[in-house]
Image (tube, rainbow over all chains, first blue to last red; front, top):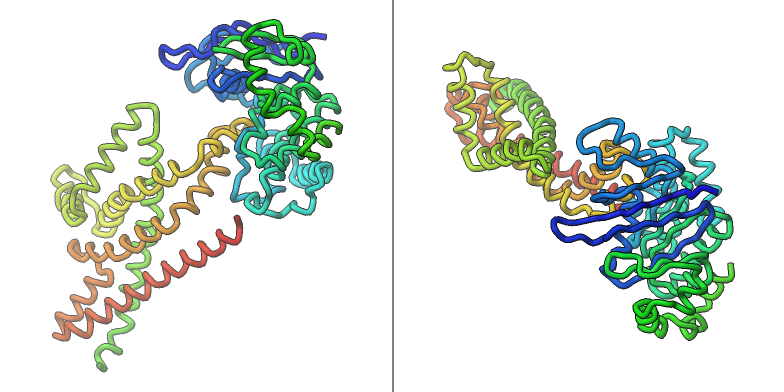
Length: 271
Length: 214
């Protein structure tokens, strides 16, 4: 099967500082890829380059068989339309949820399908209610985001992206801003998405999530992919010394002991 | 006292003109302010520099001088306007400079993620700005923009110097006839007070409504 997303030799610089030194990755449809690495390793920048919230300095981006022209500077309508096409096919969930505080839950969800895909309002509302039912939040339909817990907000943010029926979902450390007891419900939703066959790329600090849900793990270090492969191998028997070092610093903090102390998380991972 | 009551219809007429001017000026100042605020945030120097200059120049010079310069000065270059038009344009440009800084402050108060999330969902920049950013900015700046609207409403009295028969000039005309400056200045003041009170009350109602919707 041809890859859904292919990245070739992607570079990103801020001024004279290069933070991504030529990243190449291909992601097959249905694949769940975890991206791990220390802060500043470039993993979030990489993710943000994939839907062009950051413009790569050079490299090729091929989505769904079509090369994405991102470097065509200027006001071009065609470039804007192509960017909007890519973004409507690639969902992104942020660490800080970014729900719109002046809009109710349902208004948050129906906005993009209506504004971008011109879905009629009643259809968008029906679909949003279905999604809300799936995550058990249909009773929060008319609530404003500030009335929701962090975990609920993040789950609404996820289905807000799903309402666009994306082919690929990007997750940028989506549990990092949550209280520990709220992490489980978000990971659980992500696990069920993965089980449904969604193609996913998740920058995460949750090594146990990466181990149990992702097919493949990519380890970023210093702006390059230091190691990648099947998650079971990269996370359990890493070949590279720096991967071993990173994991040995990370694992004690979120190892099995925490999983046992957090029934929500364990439940989430079984789902 | 009788003459005060007798003069009320005339005052009503002048009050209506004051309201017309104030509404026009306030609405136009939002347009000028929004354009200048966006200009000042632009990455293009050709948009940034004029906005910077506009805000700097207008805020740094007295409104009265600006009114004189437009109404009496521009005819030297063949640009003549009615007192009403000259007054509305000048006051709008004047207030617009303050509004620009208020809006800029509001835009800065919106977290970066609010700019990114609509874009990441495929909305155009114009759609994101109009539907996601601007409504949030409007809520943040409501108290400051109300303050500016109140100041603008009172500044319409400056147009008396270029013969616009708004509330202040009307009061002066009546005083010249009746020699009762105390009564009529107080009457004019009370009418301004009523108008500004309506304005701040409307703002408070909006604020309460917004608080319920968040």
